Image (cartoon, rainbow, N blue to C red):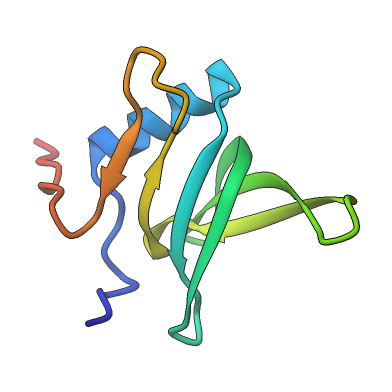
Length: 105
């Protein structure tokens, strides 16, 4: 079952991504691409969250098969899960299927 690409990340997930950026923590991310296929990004370094034209994007650094560095931008509404496997505090993990939505009042 594919989740809606229009569902934004909740507030807790946003906070965890921002913490991962500030603390320079590597994440494993599962992302639903625009065409519907799932992509897994292992041990990526999140470096920025930006909003442009109504779309929020997470910029990450990763490597290609030859060891080169790639800079990618992922739409945050396509992020299905992420986790830092470093066991540092605070624990950073998120799963869109089990996350509650954020109430903005």
